[in-house]
Length: 189
Image 1 (cartoon, rainbow, N blue to C red):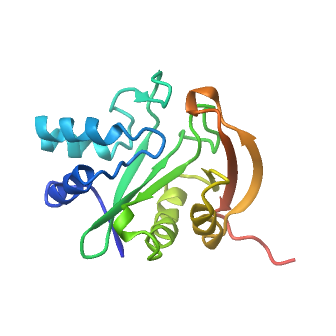
Image 2: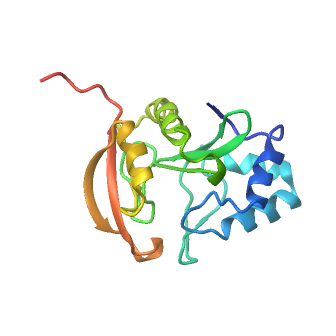
């Protein structure tokens, strides 16, 4: 498994996954169709907007349809002989804090036909150095208590449960588990 920066060389594989019904946004399945339209209009522009470390891409649409300012972010494609999913990192420069409308620093999604192979776990571990490189001391990752596979992925990467809470209404208002992965080595006790 390797993480690839989105590129025109592999965009047709990404589009094929979208056309097969995979969505890069587990809270907004309609995002797949929106991305297909964007890709068909201008593939080069579509790819350029996927990796946005300066937050120039315009607002983000939340599950309730509201829009919020985009955070700096990077997206990487999970690749293992083919497109297998994506993982993204978002942050606010100079702090680990995130706005209440952002559920965590890292989000990921693996295509259904490649789930259960350890790809999400490998991708999560592989993106942590990039989180440290942008100045984060830790990352927060959220998941639903109804998603034990995601809980295992986060725990395998060193995630510790911080809290369980109900997400903002704009994010669906559902029960959410927040995990934290420290990026700074912990002193032995």
